Each structure stands twice: as structure tokens, then as C-alpha cells.
Length: 209
Image (cartoon, rainbow, N blue to C red; front, side, top):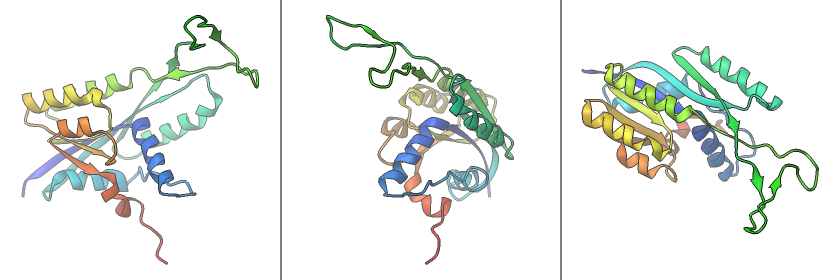
């Protein structure tokens, strides 16, 4: 039986936020944690192999944090722990300041620096560099023959051109793993797809009554 080399690429916030939304929409009151260490990579590798023998090559996670937000210190520590898991490589980018908040009235456009109710400074950040890192690694590993099938955990349509290019120019196949309600454009560009709704009973087993 042929061996299929599988490498996994995860857009952290794209995945984590939709994971939270899904479970919140199911009426789950408790936090449902993603089983990062073993279940997630093992199950995704098995699904990607399509019945063949899977050789798991590793999981790449791409995340961002706000260096100016003390609450992100816990996230930074978590990502460091995640990076220590077998086969994991975590890339972390600093979030950048977003454009200032202004009054939407065309005749005004006044810059709003502080909340009119509590007086705290309004500070927004945006993710920069994460998509570029995902694309760079995906293309590099494909053309360096470092996987047969890649699992891309994201709904971001910005990845479509790279996915189509890789699959046109190489024999590599890319499988999207995501939720049914999101990511249709990327899903249609990929060779195949996996829905997390179909995996949840194995990813997060329900306690027996």
C-alpha cells in the first residue's frame, strides 16, 4: 500500500474563532478545547490519506498576538507550549495598529480616541504577515517535495490563487479542513475537503451517560 506524506497548515485565529462560534451555536456552556496535541493531527492525517497509509510530517500553526495587550501574555505562553508539541512548528506575528476610529458622518470625520462612556483609549489592531507566512511555507514545502497532501485549516479565500497554482504546477494535493458554513471558495479550489462537523465525535468524544 502506498504511503501518503501529510503536512498540516493551520490559520490559528481563523480556526479558533470559528471553533468557538460553532460550539457556542450548539448551546455549549463550557469551553470546548481544541485537542491540539494528538487527536487533531492524527485524525486530520488519517482523513487526508483516504484509506492509504499516512506518514505525518508535522503541523504548522500561524498565529498573531497584540504585544501591547497584557491579556495576550497568556496566549503567548500557550503558543510557546504548542510549539513544544511533537511535530509542531508555531509562527507568531505581532499585530499592528489599525486605522483610527472616526465619526462616520461625511461632514464630520472627527477622530475618536477615547470611549465617550468609560473614557478609555480606543485601540484596535489588525493581523499582518500571517497569510504571507502560510502561503510562503505552503508553496515552499510543495515545490521542495516535502508533502504529498497538505491539510489547510482555514476559510480564507486569499489562499485560493496559491492553492490553484500548487495543484496546477505540481502533483501535490491540498485538502481544506473547516466547517460547512464557511470557506466555500477555498473549499472549491482544493482537491478535497473535510468538515469538522463530521470529525467532532472523534476529536472531542462526549462523556458516556
